[in-house]
Image (cartoon, rainbow, N blue to C red; front, top):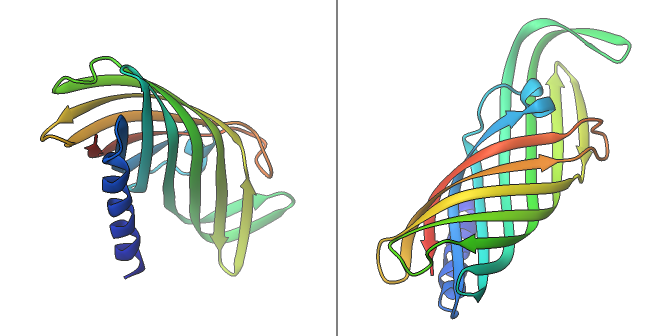
Length: 196
C-alpha cells in the first residue's frame, strides 16, 4: 500500500511539474549493472530501481534540474568459506547494495520540439550507498556518501501533446567515501514516461 501511495504521489507531482512552461519531468523504471568494485561484490543485474528527473529549460536546447533515483542490487552466494578481515566463516552469503543518487543536472536537447529528441546530460552530486553482507547470524554493513558524476545519453519520443516515452543510459561513478575504499559505480538502463 505504501508503494502504491508513493507511486501515485510521484505521478501527480510529475503531471503538476510538467504543466509549468518549459519543464521536463521523467519517471522511469531502472535496471542496474554493477561495474568495478560493486560489480565484483554483486555480479547480477538489478531489476529493482526507479529514477525521477526534473529539468527546466533555460534556453530552448539547454535545461537544468535534478535527478533522484534508487537501485537495489542483490545476490545469493552458495555455501562456501569466506574470509573477512581475520575471520573465516562458512555458510551462504546474501549480498545487498542500496544506492540512492541525488544530483544536480545539466541537459542539452538536440531537437526539443521534434517527435524524436535525443539528448545528453551530466549529473553532479552525491549518493547514499549501503552494502550489506548477511551470513548466518552475522551482518557486515558498509555505508558512505560518495561524490558522484553521472553522464547520460537518452532519447525522448513525444507520443501526445505533453506526454511521451523515454529511454536513457546513465553511468553513475561514485568516488571513494565512508567505509568504501574503492569506487561504487554502475550503469543503469531506464525506460519510462516523459512529460513536457
